[in-house]
Length: 317
Ligand SMILES: Cc1cc2nc3c(=O)[nH]c(=O)nc-3n(C[C@H](O)[C@H](O)[C@H](O)COP(=O)(O)OP(=O)(O)OC[C@H]3O[C@@H](n4cnc5c(N)ncnc54)[C@H](O)[C@@H]3O)c2cc1C
Image 1 (cartoon, helix red, strand yellow):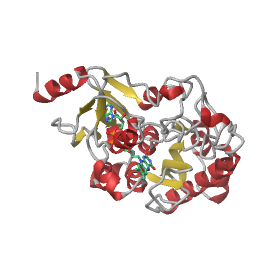
Image 2 (cartoon, protein in one colour):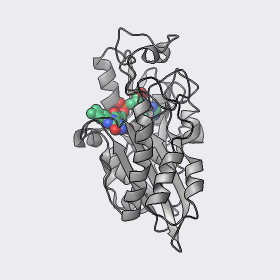
Image 3 (cartoon, helix red, strand yellow):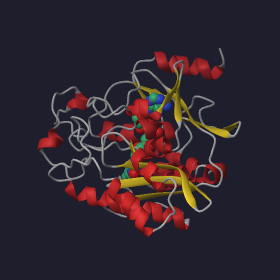
Image 4 (spheres, protein in one colour):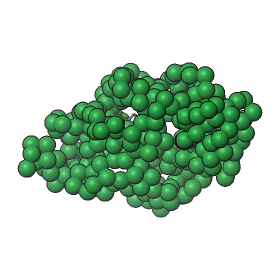
């Protein structure tokens, strides 16, 4: 057995919560909502590489968000991913946090993070946010938990059709990792003791246009209210291979295949982008305090498409 496999095997057998960069785990520890043993995977060799595999790329689970944002080949081949990584959290967090941890971070709901409250995610049988304060909650109500999934990179990687590799379990689509939102007890479908080792990106599209944009209640250091990633190619002046993801609005990251289908074959322009924005709100069923997000979804889709078209690099709203 190789040194890496041996270390991973020991980590898998150890009892406790995996700790990678620790930025999410330590916050929950401080708030009394993480307890018990930890299994530190940050020193396991071989998890910190970005490698080419044919034309595709593999990113190790311990690669930091900052490395994803600034890697020249990621910027060139997967620009929407690099932009979304560069726009999230703060420089300090991006330097410490791993891409694996960013996909598997726990929900930001204030009831979940408060030790005095019980909820589905802490073994309870109710969602206090549904009856209580859910002003930052979902506007696509897919299941019993009404707080949005927190992972920006989960959203971006879904739009890129990425897969995750799990130690000794093979690879899974991100859609499978997150499920359909009907399971209120978990933020992802990884079982206890399973370790995510890498992310596999498919071959890049030649000369794609992409943008990531978030609406946020302060300039930075906050999770977005609504976030969108868009990527497509222009072939003879028409959009093709469109992919669009919407976050901050449901308890799992969402892809919008109907909007992508609408965009394919169209000439990019303001009216088309506005229509795409409206179409993106189809199926929204907001909570009493989240009606405002529906309008924001339409505007954020429009703005992200505009930015992709104009080649604007960035992402903070
Ligand atoms: C102010 C602020 C703003 C933020 N804004 C955003 C934002 O806009 N978008 C966003 O996505 N995030 C945001 N974050 C969250 C940040 O991205 C996460 O805290 C970070 O990505 C977690 O990575 P980590 O390596 O520190 O994970 P850890 O804290 O080490 O782990 C997080 C969870 O993942 C599990 N885990 C980690 N790695 C593995 C693995 N390889 N295999 C199995 N389980 C694993 C751990 O057991 C734990 O449950 C923000 C954070 C802060 C503090």
